[in-house]
Image 1 (cartoon, rainbow, N blue to C red):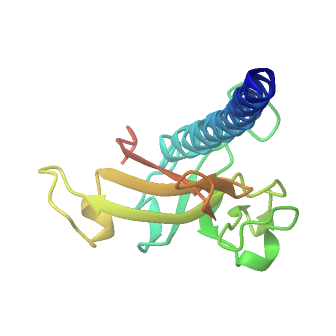
Image 2 (cartoon, helix red, strand yellow):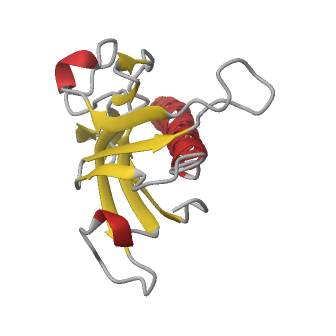
Length: 194
């Protein structure tokens, strides 16, 4: 009888240990997936920031009038020479516009909220990339004293805020729900030529 109790007890303890090992394995896989998703999301936010910084610093370059023609919270249109010195087209002024496309343009992801950052140069849509998880973009404009302004001639700083969500849902609340984690990025750019 004692042998039977020992066998049942050891089988029960062995089963519990096996379940704990399986649960630990599942948890580590989910944690790794979540970590990879968050890293990808941070990299996408950095890529979007680099694109915006590169172009917005050029506002008014080689243009000697009011460089910003449209300054809205979700759209900016400006004039600048976007070509590098020593390249073909250098010295010609380009009209550059940034705005967000509709959610239907962001194909290939399961996130229903992501959009594509659209960059139009001289009336030609030059951005045909993926959404990178971008869900919202807000421009605000500041004058010399860092006061919010809508007067195009007095704009000296462009504040850009954007939100990036993961492209695929991940499990949250210990696997009871799925969701799209997000990251927020804010930068204030001082174009030297305005």
